Length: 157
Image (cartoon, rainbow, N blue to C red; front, side, top):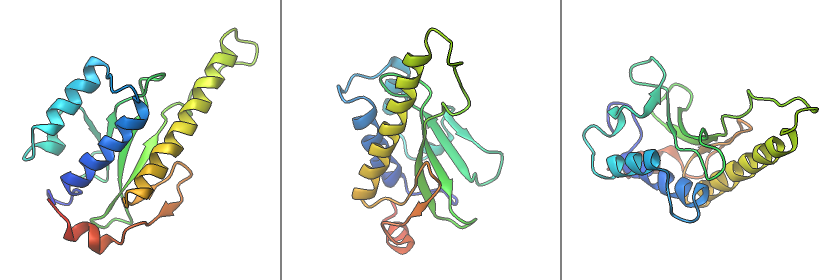
């Protein structure tokens, strides 16, 4: 573990699953490809790349990668510290809950489709993480422990 941060191999596993669902064609926007390339070629500074969003705590309690999806560029893969300990859970932040379109707006229906797509995609990713044995914190904030914290920390990179 890197100073109270999750094992890199688990983050890479979560990232791979996220990307498979968010970009099923395997074609990524240039920025996302840059993030992927950078994270696949580093270990020592893995969590210190400038594309990670972090809270101000040391070590951080929340880290996020803005990776988007094929319809919406702002969706994030988020790592959240669980109960102030050294274990982290993964979750998807659709990053669209703060936006609304008035019912009378011309693009209200299209926007609604994007919101539904993002919610469904987040659930698919979190379900895939669960099947892979990763600890997740779902969008509904219900913790689901699929693998005990002991087995996660014993499989550190």
